[in-house]
Image (cartoon, rainbow, N blue to C red; front, side):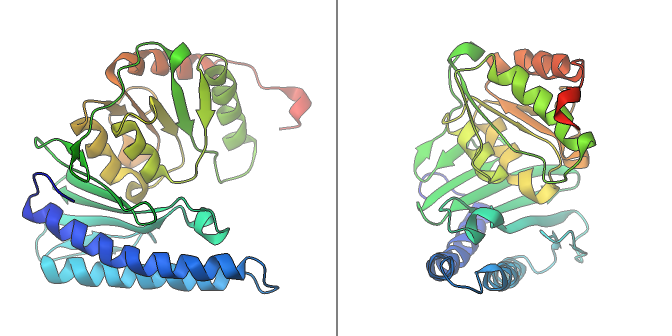
Length: 276
């Protein structure tokens, strides 16, 4: 990563690239295992755990007193009660498992209750999305800005499909998807929440929403979108993303229209013919 870099972002970048090299090698093995009888599931689980260990080791050595919130939901308390890392060593595990080349490493620095720095690294494309509060957002050496599209009709949005099956989760999402798809230019579902947020910050997507996420999925992306000039809230426009796991990220012009659209979707009747 070039451009302005603080010591914290340097630490994040070095750790992410180290883990990224290992994941790229492992991904090459996964592609071979896709055609085997055994399949790659056990191998991917091992690769994920290895990436987590290496990432915690590197970050822990750089900031010995800081705690961790990890992908497994494990909270490791540090001697410095004010600072911790929120990490996901492999965001997009299902893609990785199936040999789909779209996954990332996500690292965030939380100070108190606030996310003050974040880095998302795509090792296959060697793209580092990084931001620190008050210092802007960057993709490698280029300053990031959210898109300038002003209407939903010309916009491309991304989303994620709930992983918990059942009417209580699928039906609200299906209503949201139907409502939004009818208003926008196109919809995408790529399978890495961290990269979805990074792509909003980079102007590749005009907006993104998803529910049923975890803090390690979105923490780094929150500061990226904000520092790129975007808005990021929960689906109602409130700031409860880390608590509820619901996130809506857009450029400034599209945020309120999306809040209203998602609110309208919640009022749609269920569809009996679906059987949900």
